[in-house]
Length: 163
Image (spheres, rainbow, N blue to C red):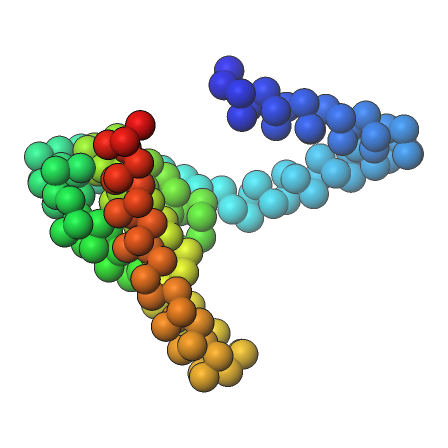
């Protein structure tokens, strides 16, 4: 087990102990809520892993390395930004895809740029943001964050060379 798994297991055990201490029915209620959440998100998680696996076997490693690998440099970072900004989906679907790209040869800078662009630029969220908040606010936010994903990817590449 890795450190993250051990920390999550310790937190879950501590919360279960607190739930038992606060009331006998609370642990079961919490586990039932967790099961409902898992059930609702299971299709997204499974499809994300299926896509990630298929990307690894269908897209040639050389192609991913050429377009998104460390040797692609700034071009790879910018390409990852564009794709990250266009990819819709929840973290359950996107992070397995990003992990698959990374394992298939995408460079650190491209992965950082992809995740940053997905988080900040998601084109699929723009209409909702404009409708629910305000189009001016949404466009100003997009303008302010426009340089963040490419900068993050380029900094990641520089740090990788430096470390």
